[in-house]
Length: 253
Image 1 (spheres, rainbow, N blue to C red):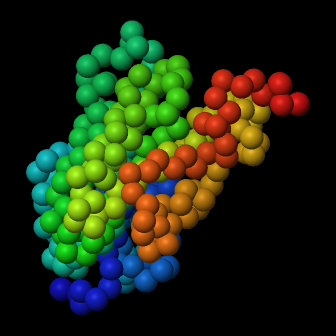
Image 2: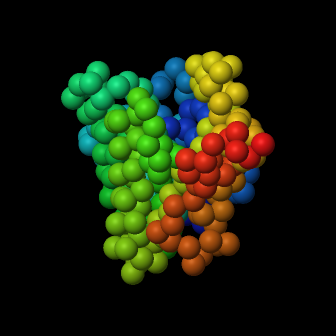
């Protein structure tokens, strides 16, 4: 087992995208980082730059997997300072076409997984006075079409964050939430048509997508001592998208 002097961050859904960018940032700041993902192929393709990072293949939507995940991580490094609940799945379909199986698949990962990972971490976070950062979405703050399961799961993550902050504060554990807006990931660029890209650019005051590193920077800030008196907060990292409400982009021209 490694020395317990270094802090440990667990980042779920970290084989790619925002999760991987976040894991790399914590590692660059001398954290040990447990990279958790259920995609074995993506994990095997990772080129980890140093021995501060290690991958763990588990599906956090499964209770037994969560239990085994913590056992293996804690055999590697016996403390937990930060948990980033980033793992999530998206399902875009109308309410009428979203049957219970589709609904449940989203909830099991996006909501149940975050709840189980957080609950398991509490006893370790008490010892380190650590923090939890939950990743929601702008879709949890404002409704949109075709997102009944996804948007509802992310709205629930926002409420979960507040519940956790209210209960865990007495232990010195801080809990906050990031709600990313549109982010320029490989997946987003693969599925967003030019019309969608143009529409987002028009609707976002900063007129662009965010980057994975910009979201990672916000996550790292909330986990750091610079945010030592911040808990129970929802930070939209979205270029001003949520702040515009229902304002029409054409009125800003």
